[in-house]
Image (tube, rainbow, N blue to C red; front, side, top):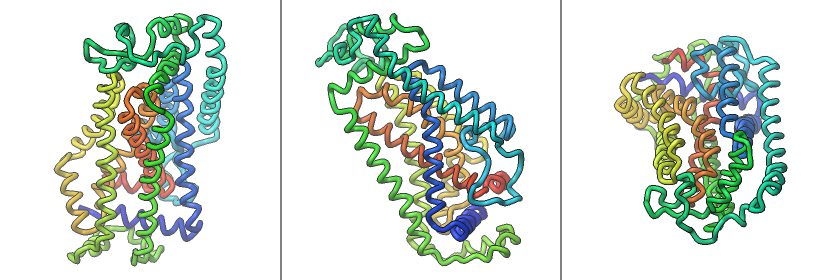
Length: 408
């Protein structure tokens, strides 16, 4: 087991703070979050038009990633949304291919602006169009205050206890059918968005979202705060020239992995990596169960497929669960994250987190029938967002992708 990646990451983080101060790297980290969130404008348009715009948007970015990075690296969905560059470091050894040119930014940001404009247009035009077609255009007039039983023809996600013969619903079938019939197929998702607001009669949907998102943000900020405080207790110092010349090879790092018992803070940092990986994967797995519970079987299949891709990748990498267990125990014993554990965490952030975040963002309105599921899904979305930002900062801003490829 090797310990090459973590010291290099710590050194480059220290180098960034030395050159740019302690505040600018935090700002860059926040901007990575905002940049990825801007991609979710496609989700808002999909709510108002059709879900087909979502895979089309992803395919465009996949094609650009394949053209720029090659088919092998484009298999990691994270690289579909972030250009290969560093605004903090410019290390020649990590320039492995052509950089993103201006056309990438023009296409990507142009699509995001177009999606936002399309969402605003649909939000303004659709109610007027439905008002001309049917007098039941107002959603609050089509929702019943008490659940009724004539809902056999409604989608499963609009029913309470959809698997039961006595399933109930809050949406009038007549309104839903008239909405679908009055719009072309590429705008019928608007009917689903309006129907989802019927569940707000049972509880305050906005309050639940605010509470769950606030709780998730508090956990995220606590995590970052502990990470920054931990650096104050570090006693390691690096000579930058000697550090780069040695290349962080085995003997120098194995000396750090001495038999001396690690302090509690060092073990806490290892526990943080392990627990966050488990928590993110656990909430995603629970999301599959919750999709089934709320009648969203197609979302359950897609989410399970994403998780299965990561699990198969770990098994093919050798060892699977047993290797992860060994790496975790060794990391706790030494007080440093091993390369194997770090690569496993980054693999989840590269593949699972971006795709799950897109899926969960789109599906959030389809699970609004359950307050518990809504809170759980919001927490999972925030964890996925933090994972995406962590991976983008580590691999791109700190230019560590080449070293991870070598360790594999």
